[in-house]
Each structure stands twice: as C-alpha cells, then as structure tokens.
Image (cartoon, rainbow, N blue to C red):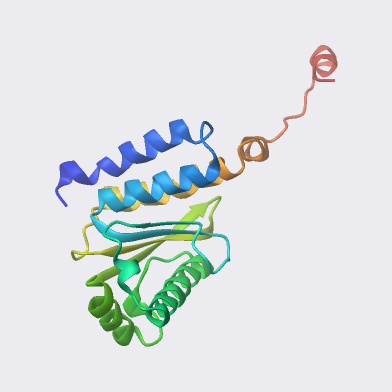
Length: 187
C-alpha cells in the first residue's frame, strides 16, 4: 500500500468515531467491517468482540463463504475463532501460520478461499485486548506503520461505542473539590 493510502485508515476511524453514537451498535460494527475490507481489499473481514466464538460482524466481499460446503464453512468458522481468541488472549498480532497446524491452515484457506494472507489484529482499549479484527487478504502484508497505529485506534473507538455512556465517565476520575462553595455546586 502506498504511503498516501496507508493513512486512509485514520480517515475511516475518524468518520466512524463521528457516527459511533448516532447508529445502532450492530450497524456500526457492520460499517466498520465493510470499511476495513474495502481499505485493505480483504476478501473477508470479521470483528470479534469479547470471548465469544462467533464474529460480532462479518463482511464477505465476494460471497466466498457461500461457495463452501457446510463442513468446510464450519472448519473456516472454527479457524477464524481460534485465530481471534489467540489474539484476544495476549494482544499480539497473529497470522494463520502462528496457529498450531499453521501451514495446513494456510493451505486450506488458500485452496478454499484463495486468500494467501490472513492477519488478526487485537482490539485494544485501556491496555487490554478485548477482541480481534481478522482480515483474509488477497495480497501480502499491505500494512504500513500508519495502518497498524490506525487499526490499534479502532479498539478505543469500539470500546467507546459499546459503552456509550459509561466509557467516558469511567475514564474521567472524580476530582475532590476543596472549596466549600464548589462542594455545594457539586452536591
């Protein structure tokens, strides 16, 4: 990806942040997955929130998953969940090769979905991973440093969107008031 295009993920994050409180959370997740898939020309993009095995949002650009047999689709879903869980547990970027049986997994994905590269980015907020973005790409590593920072910022946007009212209150500590007059206003 060119340097000019690598910063575009920031525009996506900015636009989504502006809309985060205006749309239902499920719609927000779908729009995010669609935007990420378009940004990186990913065949499939999935967002995993929390420790659930099922993706919270999924975009399949070319309907590649619809061509799979039920057992192949189940295997793909299991691999996707394993990759997302590995990333969520330790907050480290992973590829399909990093999983146990990685070479076999990469061969399966290349054969069934024609995706030579698979990456999972941790969704981080407040220093902890709470989910993952899995991208099934047609090209090799298309990420510049700006992309990685932008993808890391998405975790904070999602955290704020999922905790619309509680996130900001939880971050801002309640400062003690020293003046008697200010104390009255606070009460």
